[in-house]
Length: 105
Length: 155
Image (cartoon, rainbow over all chains, first blue to last red; front, side, top):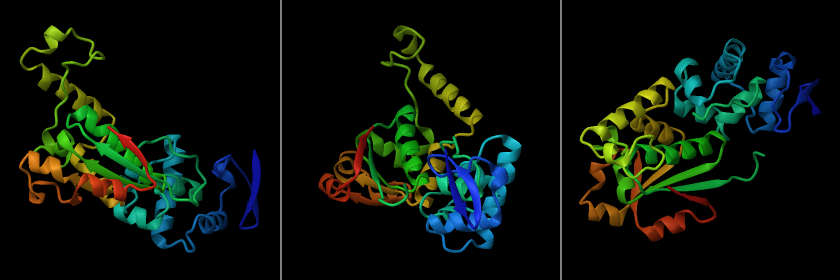
């Protein structure tokens, strides 16, 4: 178990860098993780996706994969990959402070 | 974790429904995880990207030791349609997209789709007979060149 400091906040992360506790997440934490994974600025569309990932995880008990995000967050598959070019399957969850998705799609 | 780009190249050589999905799902998973993915459709695998066939892929219960029915019964007329229908129903329940939608998603996700020239010639197909997501028709040697450095999966 490791602790990392993002945006001045110390958070617990797992071996792959996902936040252990969604409650430790703040928008500042998100910005810092995003910068680390190659997204220098979070746009309005990024926030829309992150917000969906957080509320969906809270209500469903598991984090959404790209297919679920595209179905409900108001972005297309193409846009999602433009927003998170290094792999939305993992990076949406990492920046949103929720666990690595178990979804295959 | 995110630094070096991994590259996955998948050869799809079978056109049955149950052999179409593994390659498509793996290519999609590669893109989800941020890796490069390319698919090469050859032989019967061309059915997966054949515009006339993609929505009608079947699975055969024959010659499949995993099917829980005797081969003699599996060979009866209508059994293939039944097995296909049951598989599609199960996949719909899990909200797994149909093959055409999987291909659209893959292209949107930045995976590259290629068809095999020799197989196209054999089946007398032209590029216009394929779904528009296929980027190019290439030779086996082109595939070897394009997949340099990739981890290759044969389905």
